[in-house]
Image 1 (spheres, rainbow, N blue to C red):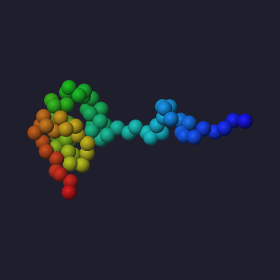
Image 2 (spheres, rainbow, N blue to C red):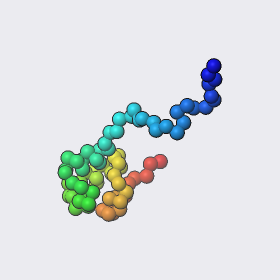
Image 3 (tube, one colour):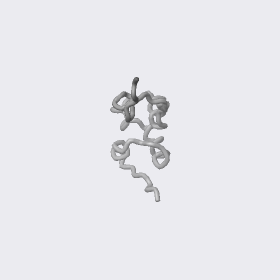
Image 4 (cartoon, rainbow, N blue to C red):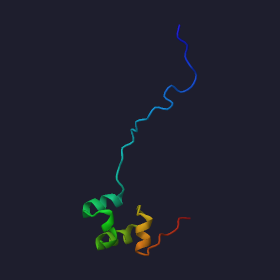
Length: 75
């Protein structure tokens, strides 16, 4: 007769994520512009998009700092 052991039988096993990975708006814009991370700071089109969307979309902090931009604080 087999007895059931207490605890989670899947403990320590890798879990498969069922949540789809969706790129951020920033990643979509970068892909559409066809630029790589080391080209971000040189792109006038990306800078324009960031200045318009920095308060509502994800933008890497380092890029905001490079361009001297600040984001409105949420209250």
